[in-house]
Image 1 (cartoon, one colour):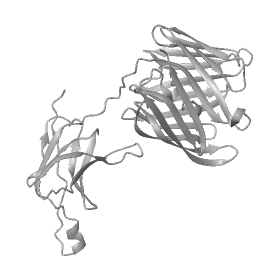
Image 2 (cartoon, helix red, strand yellow; image 1 turned 30 degrees about the vertical axis):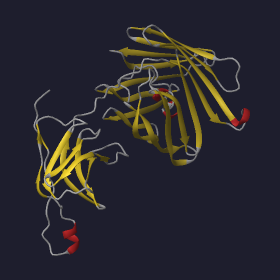
Image 3 (cartoon, one colour; image 1 turned 120 degrees about the vertical axis):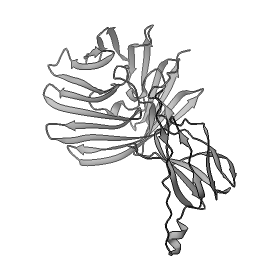
Image 4 (cartoon, helix red, strand yellow; image 1 turned 30 degrees about the horizontal axis):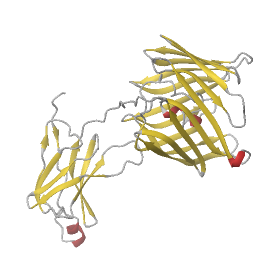
Length: 367
């Protein structure tokens, strides 16, 4: 690790003014001494800030200085000791550049800044494989008002999907997609349905080109993929043989923070997704963005399902703000919330509330 000097710098200042309100805002700590760190701080370290004036009511909090992800709130440290010479606390799980805050008696003071190590953008994948997912949704025409789609997966000895069987609500016969892999291609053929063929051209394991064709239609979709480092940044091409389209993806800190679908013919942002995260890891054998968010990505619904689009988002979303322009209804905006049920580290159910309309994905695993 490079030996960089990270200074935990004091930003507090004193205001000498006769106004009582200004005096109330003065930092109540005298003789503040901030430790210096040769390397970035790690979560779980014990740190002491020296100074007189800390009390049992003193709390240390951290706030990310620059955040492109909405919803990142202040994070509280665990205070382990307070005495006449300072305050000792255990650093929480935060990353990057953080402001250090003193909160006490309903007031807040900024003490300085601390640089933490960056969070790893890799996630450790759990070993069990998903065998089946049952999607449930509200449908007044379905039995008991609940519709169900069933997805069943099988894998090769490398853990890659080789077939996906889908039984849609109300249907007795499923249709199936089969996957064939080579060193520079993934071909997905649909048996039943529209009998479409999707061909991905791969480079170093990442999709670089995509084409979807049909045996009974002349229309096709064709896209090129671009990456920013290890992460997908853009899909650009044509749909239905003629309409230009662009999809942009923004990743910050290993998380997909924004998706934008642009109709280039009319220069409209047809869909804009802004993601907010909590702490649910995206660590199943399948990237759940390719399942629970499939309906929100415009041109390739199961885009993230086959692990060929670079690194996955480390976390699964807690909320998504969806906005854009509809050809018939004009501008729209609504929110989608996500909750997860977990047993023994494995997600067993994802519950989605889309502006009051509920969906559930129940997840089953191989033994």
